[in-house]
Length: 166
Image (cartoon, rainbow, N blue to C red; front, side, top):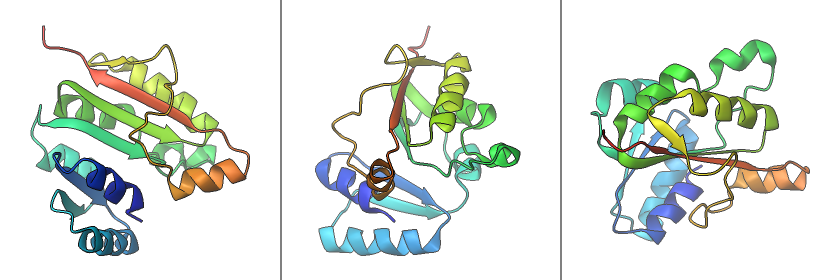
């Protein structure tokens, strides 16, 4: 619903942010926050993230990508709908600048484990931790995280960096 994007953008006014969202109420909520906080460093695209990354973002232009609590599609028959798939991770890795990062956070253990496997398999990326990373201080608590913690869920962070150019 935009609260995390707005918080991060407000904390780092020197950086520009592009929010990609298909959920119209989430876009409306973020627009209200942008206005309330008078943010000048956030742009929004109302479109499918895979298509945006594939068709609208040039290679080596992103310094960071945040995927916080993407839909886990917990039923095994729905795993193919998960955002973190090898093809999408490869697209993201190509769009990152040398040293740029990809940060994923989830409260679904199965999704965390499969994401770690997918990210480790991408040769353009390297893990910044031996496995899961400690929660970076720049990531605010999201409503999904707060709800998950109340339900007894653990939260897993993955922070991978684009390898330097050879």
